[in-house]
Image (cartoon, rainbow, N blue to C red; front, side, top):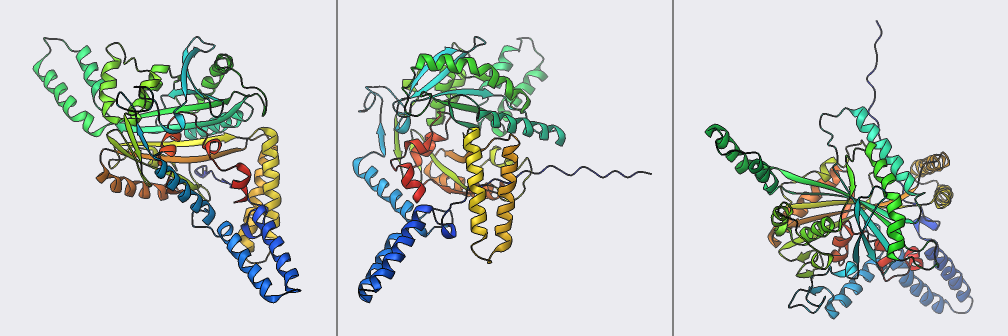
Length: 499
């Protein structure tokens, strides 16, 4: 008799944040500043011990804000910069937004606030003749197309099929590194209560006047009970392209980018067919404007659904924004709703299963409307090779500094070496982040929503924190608008790296 062992479930992991090349986890800039300061202190002792002590105090004052970090990895300098930026925003009234007929912005229109205020929406056709919307962001020269997916559920699906979906999704992400002019991508999973409008319209369209009383009674009971416990789940993938072929080159026009993106869309949507994304089609301009309008004012969701069956809403991009919005330190108020956005500060550690994020993206009774957005910024093949090789060298350097914590350092070296081997075999290297936005109907429900997210994050093996002082920008980044947040910061990239 032959006994066969059950196959072990497949695990995933090795999510790595590149190590710095400085001393003891410090950045290279802080390490050089520290060494230069120590040399200056030693040389000053030759002249005056008191001057050397004063210089040492100055060195501590300068390096401490750059070296001391909180549990989420932020330095004191970064936290101070956020506080200063928030003070400047509130002092200038930048946290307030008023539009519409009585507003001062948009000439009577309801344009999007904040980072997306100057964005424009156009519509073109792809290689299959399908209409698609393209968002143009003049500040960064980016052009974004959004793909709507009818994602397949994992219920009653065997583990082998799920592993196949994950493998094809990983391959699809890997190909983004070779996609011409692609700057970023995002996946947004939005859950919201089902208003019952679609069910009511479906029953009305298939009912007859002489139906039996039992059938009519059953349908009325379904209409009354079904929407109370059901939810809508929408999955959208945003692909952001750069209008400049290379840094420093002239930006291409929106018409040229529409032609470029239109030729790429058929292949991209076809590649999603084996990832579990279901039917993937580009969103039209009206559909995208409706989705953004509902995000800023959830109370119009049922009205939008009803209008879709009676000739369409006719919403334009200048009508997709809120009538009023006010940003707080830890929340964001927009029209008749309140939202809080969290950012991931630590990816899942160790080995995880394919369903690690299932609980996070599923509907939650304590949160009326929830969005979970994965942000991706793929490296090209050359950039990926450079990043993983440098990370491997930094891990070796740290492991050789001290014998304390040798086991952990050895594990880091092993993981970095495994990453270089996988990259050499053709796998892609991609930066990713995660945003969670919880929207409720009143300020009193914010505490309940925060408690729900605090329970969901540990189950997903991630660490999150509210985006204090930047709730409006984080809310917009969690929408499928193609905003690349690092390119909108006022702090130069070189300074952020040093911090």
